[in-house]
Image (cartoon, rainbow, N blue to C red; front, side, top):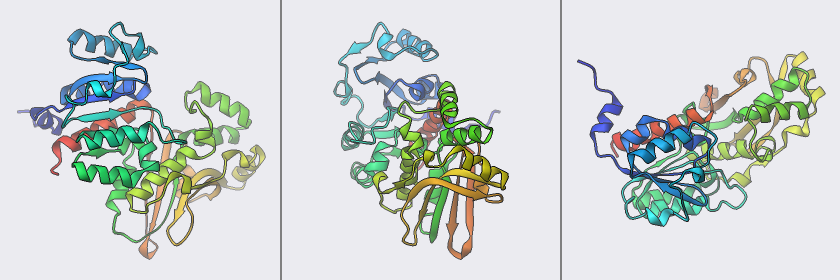
Length: 342
């Protein structure tokens, strides 16, 4: 007899209603996962200008086919312009919203208000969007406590590797500092410069590989890294905001400095760090000595080093995105929401 898996056991339970916000790379990967449809009752998918209702089998099939292409949600023949959250809010009560919309770091909106509105209405959230947790962490957590709605945000930091789980497991410990590599794009850029390419050539290669954010400043000026550092720090109870992190752009160092460091047995890495002994959280290019575990973090991998009491340290390294990993991690959050005792 086949042993019953966690997902089998979840599927035997009530399937909560769900709504997907966003049909970009992560949203498309999510709709391609059988677990997304089998473990929830999907009501619809929304984009910025409207959405679709998924109340017919043929519509679900068309959505999943569109997700394999570059098609927009609005390209579907049954797309309804102006369809919005208010059209689903009553049906969604007690359910879950999957959020895969782009970040909105400068204003925080509409991202923060969307999350708070869901939580106020008792709707759980599972999100890949860092915005609410980088700018309004305590407000979001308090709204979750008040409504007893679940929050899943594993996908916001190093989606392929459970950095936030490790941070939760270290609550109550005397952590002295965090040092981390949290942005795969800058890893890629630095490796190309080490090979002899210029910053401009490296940026162009990153664009071709679809590694670069539409607004490159998010990567190369440290906003992405700062957001992730903020989320990790807040998970540990430190109470900071994205804009508390002092950022030095990657391009404050030149190509020759990167290549000279490599010849000397060192490497520049774009480091997100926070010393809890009175230091400020920072993101900056830093020289890393051979032997430091962060020295070897390359490609699409992230690494994080926690220094603890008694000069102990805990290190975790693993893959971050791409979109398909992020989508799978959102299913991990869904399993926790449905199966774990709360």
